[in-house]
Length: 95
Image (cartoon, rainbow, N blue to C red; front, side, top):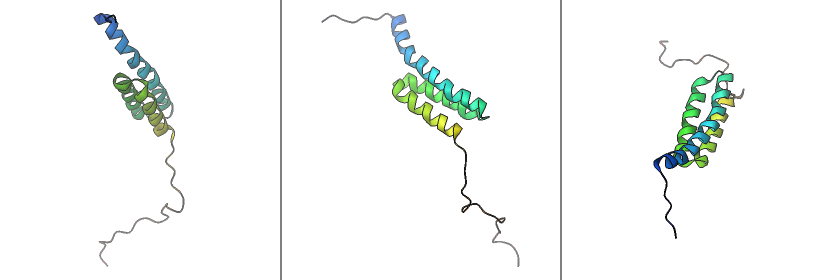
């Protein structure tokens, strides 16, 4: 069996392919975050997806992209039965 030899530049580019895929997938939460006025979550999603691409490739990039996209798109909905109609009363008030 023949040995496989890679030069440093070839090894670098083979390592950069998953990072580039992660960065490309990370642009999805970034753009959605900018549109929905949640730039911080979008930027964190881009960083997490790119680092996930560097560590485990697409296996970690796609779930992190999906999670951050969901976090950006979800609306914080409080059901009416749990919402308070009155202001909370402090227990330490003097009678």
